[in-house]
Image (cartoon, rainbow, N blue to C red; front, side):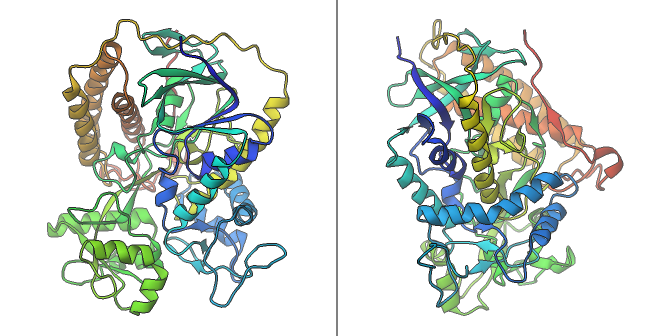
Length: 550
């Protein structure tokens, strides 16, 4: 029988939130960090823009708070926004102490005594009234991720399990029947079942505290800026275990992903528009002035819908992002990674516009948490894009995501360490994974067919612009697909593809149900049947919880 792997803290996911949490709690207990591919593969690693925080002389916490509230279209939780914004500078200084190198103004040097830069080079992005984006050129996520990974790998109390994908959470009342879990709503979490992708065995990981930090769910959609790992695993597992989820109708589509037949998931950072880039159509007409007073620096939901409208009107495949009016030296220095990547596809951004289209980018909803990252299942935390904290409301302000991950990883780590000091709850003997009655699959076409169908129906029916008719069609199709996946799941041994398929089906259904429930247009959710925001009836979160299955 597979040996149970025990720890004080079980962290599922290896982006900025999971890695930060691991480093903060490792001095207080044994840490196991599980990640389904290599540790550096995460949304964090692909983040180009930076981290929004107040450092400029003309900026203030009040301005950052107001920008966040404005972007969130009435659904942000003001107490959460104030807390995250005010904690930001502290968390960024901690990254510097760990070795992260951010871009500074020319001629500036670090303060040798404190190791804190005298002055950051601050960028500006859509929705921000001031320059406040702390960045490492145009590869901020990679700089942060690689620094944290080095620290995690060298820490003696952190055990790293790469190429391990979580199947489901284990709660105190978990009952297993061929891999199907049922729970009550009074559970506490005590670990997870995890598939070792190399041995194909499902292992039992038990822990006093479990943290979901699995990132987003962009792969629910056909076109996305996210890496292949972004299949909503944490949201799906949390929901199946009985945790409340919220606001999953608010899916952010980034306006500017590179449009090229050989480019996959490559984002053109919003910072390009922050430095003067202009979105134009095939004739060179700058059309954003027709949609918003902030033109190209409008919030992402406005820009994405504008592009979608223009493409439908003209029948063109893409629009263009043009920054060629800036000097070539400036572009190469400010955007070295973007410049080189575009050159690989035959595009010289110093001389010609970049072809772009919107793509699914960020899930504003997720597992509901309090201000310390706790879910409504005891000893289960959620941090990063997996969580719904109340910060983003109906639309995330650019570069607030890494900020949220840092702040909530810190808050959650403080609370989780306190959990260890409390008297232990009686830990049940955890049931091992039960594969009895399952066989190796001889129907792989079921997985590939359903995978493709889910992503296409979500793109076509639950995309940037929605309608009641499209949502109803999507609901009918996803219910049929989910039933087919469930039958398949019962009959065959689990593998990574089946686990991810099951998860994107779960998240897709939650997005559809949430979108059908909201009878208005707000932030990232736009329904042509209800084109206006209705504060009287709908200025509230959309909450979903799995029914008690007994």
